[in-house]
Length: 402
Image (cartoon, rainbow, N blue to C red):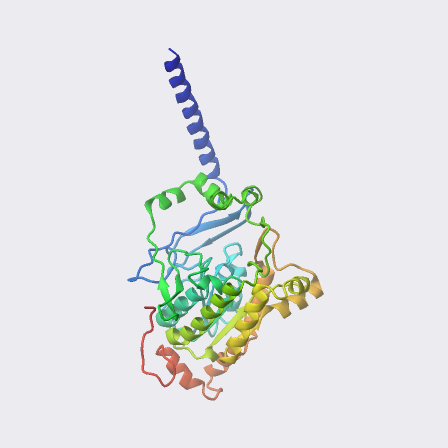
């Protein structure tokens, strides 16, 4: 009798729990629970990380579904309001980066690339190639893709705090689908693909609003794996006791710096080889500390060291670098506004508009515009070489990561 009562009690509890979860699932389906566009398989045959084309999705944050933003992937699988066309006669400027350029929390018309595209719409196309978590090593692959598939005339590459060390195997986040630098027996770094094969379970969980709420809004997985209960309760904006500077760990660990320097050197070695673009056709925008007090506090930190080294290396090689910090500092002292969201460290629309203005004022854009009417000496030879995907003076080739 007791066994029967226990069984019935267990069944009743199970039905109640299932019923409760079903009600929660139904309610959440009517709310802006965060979704993420699925990633296409990334293999040696198809080695470029992209999202599934033509998918709509919604961004929201934390338990209360804050910062709601609606967007979609275009015909080639990138988060951009424009469809990409290979045969368009307008020359292309590719904008490359990680989550700052992907900009899931920013209205599609308010991103840096959208502003730049609108300003140059009569003379240039502006396409973005970006995804959250990508480091320098992945930028090389997207840069090669933009040059190969869309015959990009120029590139704008955005650089942020965690781009350096996460390019190296020792500090990589091991994101499936990304390319990272791996040391060979000689010690030289070479690009290696971490293949991505979407699993059935992941696809199934993405269909559930409750599962997405738990894993994407509440970040249950990260909280459980890292025992960061603060992030579970308070959301992603919760900071653990680790000290940060430039949105990355401030610790100037010598081994981390050494690995980062090696990744930077490999990046500048590979970028012209894979894109066929000369340094005067590539400009880097660099995020910084954004506020004078933060910059003072961050002196001697990992990011302070690396951003200085990256800029010096780039400029020595002939690349243009736009450091956003002086622009952010001046604007903050004048207006006192913030450049990120209260709950999220990514650029807000104000910062995106400033970055776009800096891009538009770059020497690169000036050179490209005057090359259209053949008023710049030496530009025509570079244009022909870039269109063929090679460095001037070299034989034609189609670079591809090995």
